[in-house]
Image (tube, rainbow, N blue to C red):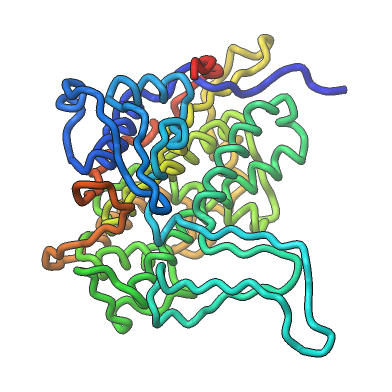
Length: 403
């Protein structure tokens, strides 16, 4: 019999300050400016003009009030609804996503009908991989957009179906969600490395001896790529890195099941579901440091509402959660019985990450790839994101869209 009780719900509204932050980032992108919220509030609505396949496109009017109201009611942003081009970084986000359902060939020849996709526009002419498919299957040139949407959808599903939270399938979906979130950061860093190696932007300095190999590296070493290549170390993401390291340890535990034990109190799972959103802010800050645009997908990820644990009415009176005594941490190796690099003292990990990333480098100029808007050149907006409060408890579902 299905459990009628739902153990999680969303807060009614996105965390304070995020909607204004997202609105300003979008307006700065589409206007080619870098204005503050205070200035945008006073600005009148405007139209964005641009070319698309040799056609002149005129967007619907946008302004601080129009965009923020849309986001408030929809808890997301859609460029299509305003006749705008997509907000993204070309080499990180743009994907040629093709599926084919045929295998055709000339019986008198070994040649098949194939789809060939060069990637020189993203990674330069020296990039050694040339995509080709001649039978049923898929081609992707970026997984960012699809992966972020999957993370958002799966997180929502875990809350909406939280009456199944005591079933094993729910735990395996949580395991998948945490793995996907960690993968998003790793993918971003590897795409950055590949871009720097084969087609560096102006101001980037890729020296293989200093940067090292891509594979078999600690995560802290991958973070150092940012400062080594751009001169802009990731020195402003302490809270986001703290959440990330905690999730990464949980991911490793769930994937390897070492130690062979696992305790998942639903109260702790709520904390993890909120830390997932901090990954969006981490990726945003990484992009800002390397001089790459954000994306609509990342902004929509940042807009996800906090999750609150809801016990059954009979059990609302509760003792404080002690993870080491009777929670997740009691199912982990005791301190000192695992490799120092893999311990669960993630606050120290976060401190080390930020400290180690204080790399002394000369200031370098960065070129940002963006779609062109008629009349001026675009610049990426700065991101001063505030991560969700760890362990805070959010609630209910959003408002009905008026759009």
